[in-house]
Length: 78
Image (cartoon, rainbow, N blue to C red; front, side, top):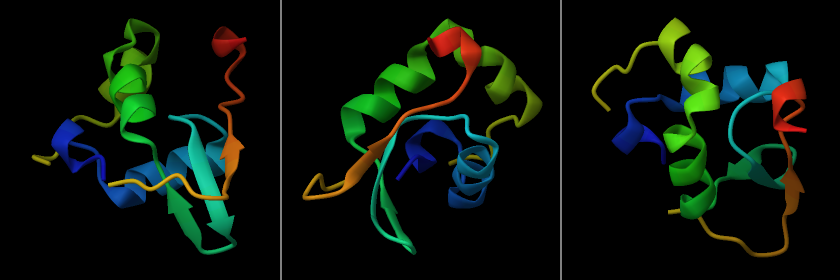
């Protein structure tokens, strides 16, 4: 998932709970997926550096079927 960016699944889960992080697709209550382009764009956006700095990288395929897209609720993104 986002391991290539040095972010664990647990960190992504924390960001989703806080309403921040990259956009994701939620297929069921327990199934979440990320589109590769959304991850790449989000991790390369300098506006997200503060989130990445508070959780430094730890050495670290999304399908887009009929899921819902959840957008970040960060005020800077709007």
